[in-house]
Length: 596
Image 1 (tube, rainbow, N blue to C red):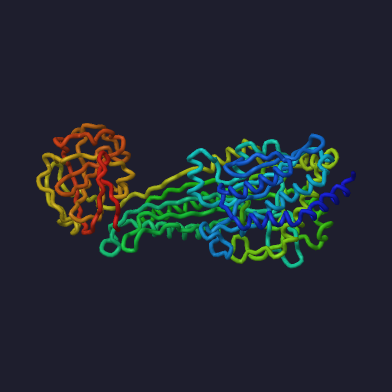
Image 2: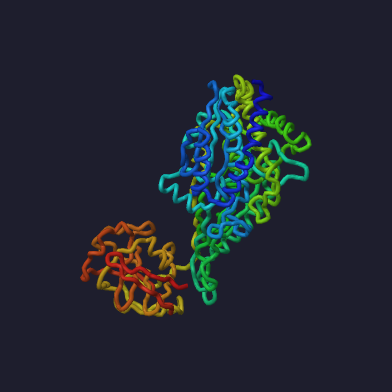
């Protein structure tokens, strides 16, 4: 059987299964699922592969599946991918009302095309003419979203990387693969059905947190450190860097603020941002990322804040392969004519297929049949023949070209390909990008500890008119009714622990807060603090004082009432607002609410 007859048989079988292929795509469209949650989509793909006799395996990377079709003789392995996940776009008319997910990036089309090609090759019976194998692979989690959820999966040891193809590479599922292919939809110009040879940007994901100091925004903004101002300055600093980016590197930086503060009358002390840093080359990407880090630190420095930066490995730039493009092009000409092709394109968006293209010969054509922008509310499939059936035929015919006979064309592609990275290089790069850094500006605030060691005094004179509480004659020792263990992270909800020697603002009524410096020799347990070993916090209400200390001071809850702690210096503040406490024996008082 010659190659022309093989292709004719494949296409005829695809035509016979046309309705089934479209039904698969429409069914997936009707049940959109976000990354690493594609349970129904995995099950549908798995069941279809099983019906075709591919003996698939399921949940290859949390979700996802793979079925292998073996030819009549051994030879190269082609991985034919389809992405399973949807994208959040709650404004879209077809978005899931609960999750906001919708297939506005066309991944349902990819899965239908992958399974349609499998139908055409298997049901036509031509695979016996092939030398090699085809790994039909449903890939999870292409969209780089829900970072908190994926972080939890990573903490549980279920994934190493946030992207599905990254995870497949790490798990070795592409180790025995020689060539990789998939397609993607795109709104193309009138009369154009295929775009061949696209290139795209890579990116690094960033999670950013600015920490300042809360204060009343109306009556005492000078006492605060405005983390929102730090973030705003940081974004302006990034804008100032844009003229330093090389045009050929196609750098894109687009931060957003995901938390701008708590309420309007409190100086923002905790501000969160997310950003991508995109670039066409790895070198340009890393250079731009350094400049962005510098801009973030400068924003913190300007207002005396602290910034925490977490870099998450994103995707590598998308590369094309001329040999594979040439084979596909000839098949597209047979299906829709030479005038239907758009040659090459430059995308500044990112695809996790870029990671694959650095390791293996890879092809990623863009297919028409849709209208509207990807990820947008206007996205629609308007021509199912062009979106589903034409790419199924073109890619199935390309598989046939590669593996026909002794797989000469596949071997030529492999011989000509020079990977930019080995798998080992790739994993090292991923680890080098995954990092956390922090920067803290010097604090210019005055110390709020005006007292003398070992001396009781009344506060609020010449320092802060709101510091009106009085602790009489505690210089000889404080005898609380009971001491409670309080973890630093929990205590952070009550006061700003990063500024021990600054004013402490506790929103309470009938309760006062004490920033106290104590003699560690008075404590019957190890006094270990990540800041200063002799600094603790005390909270008093109804005449009692409670020592707040690090979690390392295990056992402090058993201290008897007779225990005394000498207060060397302290400052007390009173702010008239209620604070509701919940008694939790052995762990101190935990606030049920923290009014701002």
